[in-house]
Image (cartoon, rainbow, N blue to C red; front, side, top):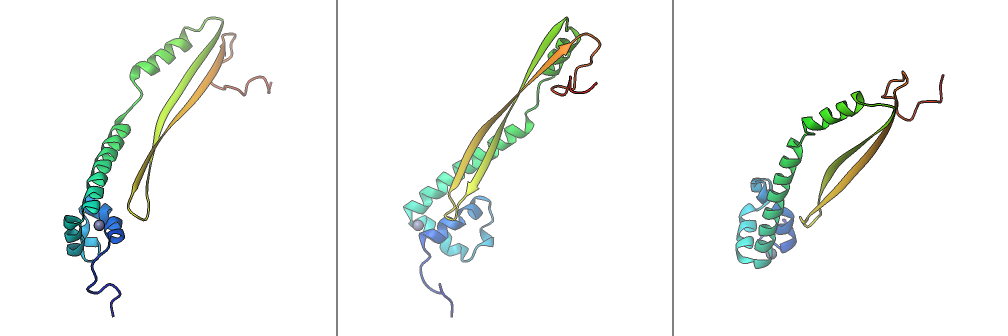
Length: 143
Ligand SMILES: [Zn+2]
């Protein structure tokens, strides 16, 4: 005795399967034909699929871009020049910034997409009296 048997498939089941459709993995869900037919007949689900597709494409694009970004060589160069050219007391301020993208998919297949900007500021004081830069914050405590 099958619980779903000949019953029509419902919106919640279809919505839960959308991610498989987008990933071209509809074969992994039960009754793929029923799901396809439902989407054709149900404006709500077909619109949701369209929305998921766009979100998915956007995410893939965003991830691809964020993975290829690198700090430009000129940044290292300018830091190096600041260190080398340091006269008396010099302060070097370096700000790192990255974007964390998190993706959540709930039980209805809705994709939630969040971007968090993370910034870290690093201040280094350099005294050109024989002390080497590099051990920021730790200096002075020990001999
Ligand atoms: Zn539906």
